[in-house]
Image (cartoon, rainbow, N blue to C red):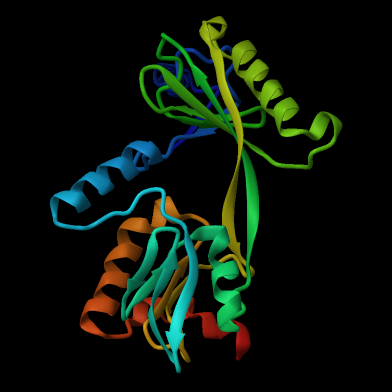
Length: 252
C-alpha cells in the first residue's frame, strides 16, 4: 500500500497511523498484514506453556560438552551434571559451532552483532514499526520502545554507546512529545548468521541423534521451523521443505 505526499487522503492515513511523526516522507509503504512481537514476552509464554505440558526446563545450566559413543550421541555434560539422551537438538545460536568442534564438525556460523536501544515513555509514541532513513523503532508496550542500529566497531564514535545515544537523540528530535523518552539500556546482541545467510536445520549425516537448528531470523521463522523440526524428530522423517537447509550443502 503506497502513500504519496501529493495525495491528501492517503497522507492523512499515514498521519493517522503515526500521529507523533514530526515530518512525513514523500511516500511510504504500509505492510498492513504484517506484525511484530516482543521476543521476551513470547519466550516467557512458551516456557510457561512448555512447563504446563510437562517439559522439564533447567535454568542457569551451561552445556559444556556433547558426549557420543561411536557415531551416536548419548547425552550432554552440563554445569549440573550429565544428562542422558538419544536425540540432542542444538539451537544455541552463535555458540553452536563451539559445541560442535569437539565432534570434528565445522558449522559455518558467525556472529552478526546488532545494537539494541531500549527506551521508556509514559506516552504511546509509535503505533507500528517505523523504518526510515533516520531510525528504525517500534513500541513493545505502552511504556517500552526498542530501536536497532548496525554494529560498526568499538572505537570512538562507532562505539555502541555512542551509536545508541545518537539513535536515542534522533527519536527524541523526530517524534512529537519525544521529550518524554528516557534511555533505558544500550546493548549489543550477537545474532547467528550462517555463511550463506540461510538456515541450517536437520540431523547430522554422520552423527546419529544430533540435530542442528540455527538461523538469523529465528523469531520470524520459529513457528513453522519448530513444527517441521518436531515432525522430523518424532516421526523420523526427512521433510522436503527443509532439504535446502541441510548442513551438507556446505560440503558438496
